[in-house]
Image 1 (cartoon, helix red, strand yellow):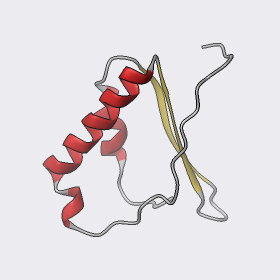
Image 2 (cartoon, one colour):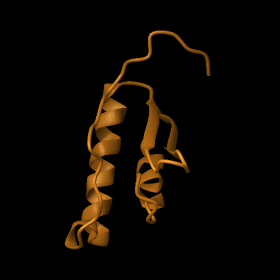
Image 3 (cartoon, one colour):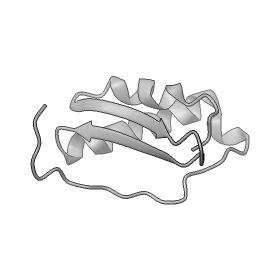
Length: 82
């Protein structure tokens, strides 16, 4: 997980209705990271992705090289409690 400033990712998605929580986690010993976001439904997740892509364009994020995640996995919550 890169430790550069990526607060803008959470800020961009925070304005999307249906986002319940978003976290970026890092193992300080290995540098391995994990991002977790909880959405009401798939539509909210898609809207958050679009908001993040728009914000990246606005701030010129892709104008400079940055470390990128190596994999992405989506899960559906079967059981839980807020």
